[in-house]
Length: 230
Image (cartoon, rainbow, N blue to C red; front, side, top):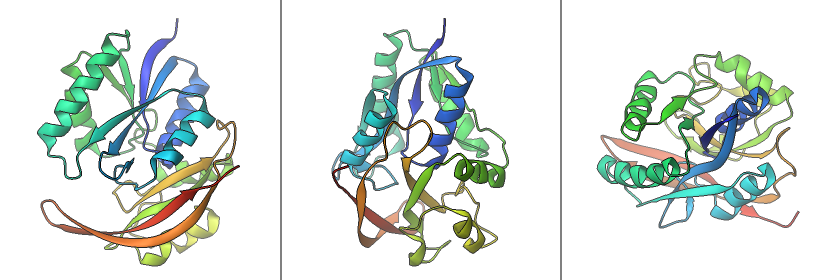
């Protein structure tokens, strides 16, 4: 019998690649995609992708979607409160595993594992410690299609927002930027791939600049994607 799991879905390339790898292994029964959504804007947290496109992804992948709605500037204790509520719901459905697309951020991995221990669930990291250049090249070769929706202005110029990840994109990346954006340099929206039943249709909208302040000020360029009919 397959192990019941949820998949922590960001809508981006690492999530798509990790889900693909998990589905190939056939060890887990993915019951839900779980995505953190900004409750005010109704967009994927950090990625800035509209709710309609998130729902289109889940429909194309054929997996039920659960949304974790969070306030605009959620403190960690608020985030953890919402997280525990939804994870306890999953536990009632005999779901014991939570799958992530993280690659090499050790602090984040440890945090996820500790939070899941509190609800007696286990974390799974199918991409852990894999070479990011290899991963992104494999991602492209497998036929995944993804577009940059958010760019850290301290790492990349505005012109990278709205670019498709392909071999030319990799050539243009500065040497100090991880090819998978694992340090938060950029975030993406996947609109097609080998585990998608259909391509997600959209058009590119405005490029918008936003600033955030946590421990310091951050600036991001966001590329708005507008859903269109297939």
